[in-house]
Amino acid sequence: MRVFLASLLVAALALVPQAAQAQDLTGYTKAQRAEIIRFAANNSLFVLYHEMAHLLVHQMQLPVLGREEDAADNVATWMLLNKRSKEADQALADAAKGWQLSGVAYGSGEFEEDYAAGHSLDKQRAYQIVCMMVGSDGKAFRPIANQYAMDHERQDTCQWDYRLINRSIKSLLSERPANAKSTVVNVTYHDAGGRLRLAADAFRSSGVFDQVAQDLRENFSLRRPVRFNAKRCGEANAFYDPDTIEIIFCYELMTDYMELYAAELPKPAAPVPQGGGAGKEKTKSF
Ligand SMILES: [Zn+2]
Image (cartoon, rainbow, N blue to C red; front, side, top):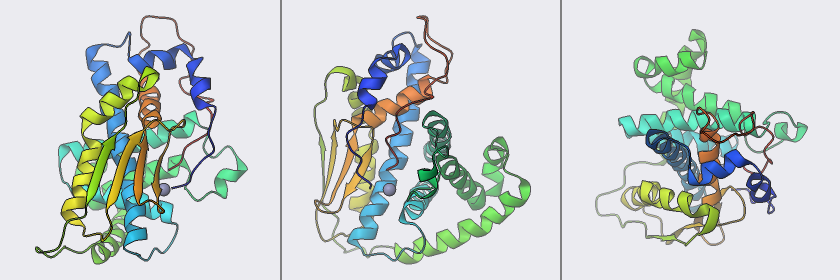
């Protein structure tokens, strides 16, 4: 929801050969390319549900006890957990990993201002997703909680955390009556060429924007129409704009996730610098 000043990220990344390779995915195998795009689309999906939560808080005037940014993450996690599908579970695992990777790449927690920020630290956001997962279903998600070295006592108390959040969200977002009107949602994909073309095409064909728009139409009756705009913004970010009732997804964010994940894979043929995405310009937090 926070709007950042235009950043130097685009220019900075253009100087890094590995980032350039991630933009068009040259040198990566077909399977790696599919993995990179899946990871980026899943992280985008999580961010879109997070923005949808800001929209709902604003348009439905929902009460929020605690920080809205934490609540928006919990709503996004809850929405995906309630789909009870392999794809949604994978999206959550990818989103947790996304926060973990971005925490390292952007040095989340290294700056004093991070502790005064509206958002939790990236690593905390990763753990909170895993906590909700294992709290909702200890058996199904114990492996991922163990993978994150979350101790068993915390895994158990995550059940209480999940139950409280589940009860709270259910009481606020109750079932819509069958005859209620659907929310009007208009989805627009703006053209993007150059270095954003592949990310823009991959974002559109992943269907994540349409999925969240459809969720909004089917499950909520907002009085005012909502616009979903995917476009080039000049920064890797996503926003809910309360003035225009609009969710904006920046194609640069899709590229950013592709680069974060590509940096974790075995390096493609051409020589690339070591260190993955570390030292990237700090620009995003949604
Ligand atoms: Zn937010």
